[in-house]
Amino acid sequence: MTLPDASLIDAVVRHALEEDGAFRDVTTQALVPPDLRGAGIFLAKSEGVIAGLPVAAAAFTALDPTNQVRSNIEDGARVEAGAEFAMVEGPLASILSAERVALNLLQRLSGTATLTRALTDAVAGLPVRVVDTRKTTPGLRALERYAVRLGGGHNHRFNLSDGVLIKDNHIAAAADRGLDIVDVIRAARAAVPHTLNIEIEVTSYEEAEQALAGGAEIILLDNMDVPEMARVVAMIDGRARTEASGGITLANVRAIAETGVDLISSGALTHSVAALDISLNIETM
Image: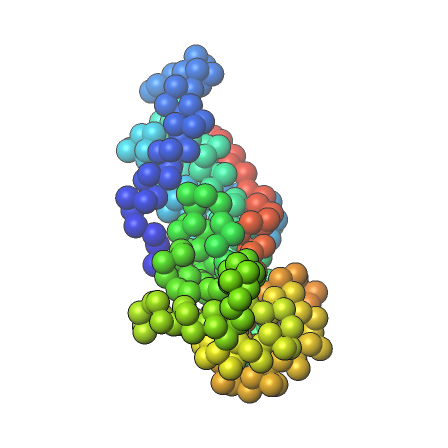
């Protein structure tokens, strides 16, 4: 999996370290001699997929370039609870000062990768992609989307300039001007390059019919129940790609995939994910 650009990682890490006061850690500076060396052992306290090891390493080297992080797994590997999977060695003061930022980023990204893997495992064998959304943590989008890929998922459009996605509020604003769904799609097609797909959100069978008539390449089925979704997918019959969104859970994702949709998008992968429980056990050397 392609890691986000090193300059982006450096900017995220340095901002987080400054926010945490890591370069002015008064407690550590008062209690830990600068020449004391130590190590930190990364311990997974629950089962999951590890994502963000290079990001955690960047936090430690930003505090002291002599810190070295070694891992016995690759980013994206699944670990069992109790697994010791990486180690950082160097001046102990710098390790302690960077610890919280390194763990915050590693735990959050690993949580995203873990949930993504669970969803992709749940739909294994079916011709569907699990994708993320723009409901990301401000400033962390590239990293969180990297974690989604490590978990076996795929990325939706990265930002508003990457593709046309006509949402309910766009449709409502157009309706105030007397435009229906067909009109909205045709207006978007006339205004954007031919290389961009037109995707539109619909909430009913009738709206999906209009979206198809308007020539949308992708039709997003928003918060439909499974029987209605299956009915809409059968009507579209491959003439446009279909995306299921809204209320996606481990309990229902398999049934949704079995309707024949091409994509299942979940904001929960990034906006409400539970951080994976990881600790750093410190040893002096």
